[in-house]
Length: 268
Length: 233
Image 1 (cartoon, rainbow over the protein chains, first blue to last red):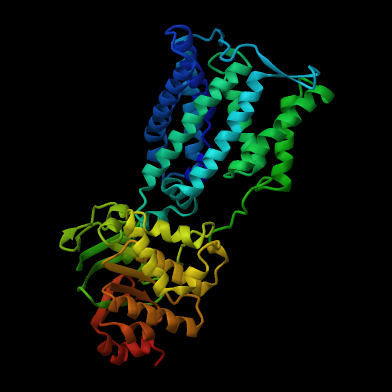
Image 2 (tube, one colour; image 1 turned 90 degrees about the vertical axis):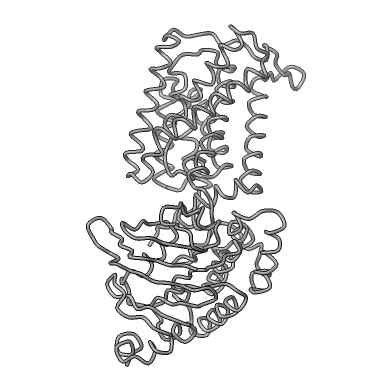
């Protein structure tokens, strides 16, 4: 979504996920805040962080070539990782179980699904529906779509393009906080590089599904997960990441717009 | 209503607009004609704040807008239909119109919508259609309707005849005259000098970034130089 509107790849997204997880970790373990408030706090802090990053790092480059912005985004990503390392050391922290170890038993106990997986899938569906509603029905959401099509024309409509882009980053960052909590509940190992791989995988999923398309990102994510798991099970555990990225390369070669991608028209 | 004084615009090292001054009075249709590349669109883009002039002033309703951001300029009642229409192709007709009313609130939006549908019944028929599927003439109507949604005092139109069949051009220009009769002041940029001068109260001729002539629509269309250069003899 951020790509669709700001026309940039936010490589620091995964690291915002990591920061969100840390915030949640500290509020749960050290300050004993109830889970719900810990998640909300993480969202607030990540939102502020997302807007701050956008203002300080990306906004001055709005007219710059996309390569400069890309490199800046990678820089922000390293900055966040190293700042986290300085603040919280590089030793992994064990993330507390937010939901307990309960699991859902289906078919008379033959199939057991951990609660966190159920919650994750549910949260993804809710977020996807929420985003679709937001961009389709609200004034700000429609303004985002207008900005993603034509920033100049959007300005002529009286839309504050800079503000709209900031709002987009804020939403992206708030959702990254939720992702952080879910991720660390499923894989309770938290360290400063926790967000790096999921960040790249999420980007892969978005490209796979069709960049700029919200259902596409979700479909891409599901397919990517299946490919990774089946790759691990039937081909090789160590090669699973390589398989994922190989699939990405093939998709980009065959269908550059992604599975549900919009045809990109060249502007004349 | 609009007064541009001593506008100078550069694209990098290229001096695109040289000392342009022009004025649009309340209720007028003023046209800015000139050949391809003369800088007509640049003048409009600078007025609406998308580009900046190095010198001079731009006054709208007696207030200087030379440093105001584009979205604030729209709020003050100056709308701009850009060259090539630039409607939002992936959004519906209705959503395009809603974006036009971005600076307006509540019942104002509904009123503006009804007025635009009255002026362009075709847009009412097609309100749920994706704008990219409209024909060229309908897209031009949508672009104009979208600009009217902000309830502008002054409407700037950039090449509304571009790419349209002659019969549609006539239709679009009669709508422009209608809008003007409804109290919207018009600043019209056109390559099609003949039709532009036929509806304009006054006109300016722009050549390589400078205004070389100005006068009433009638005077300009009678001028020998203009006839030779822009009206085909």
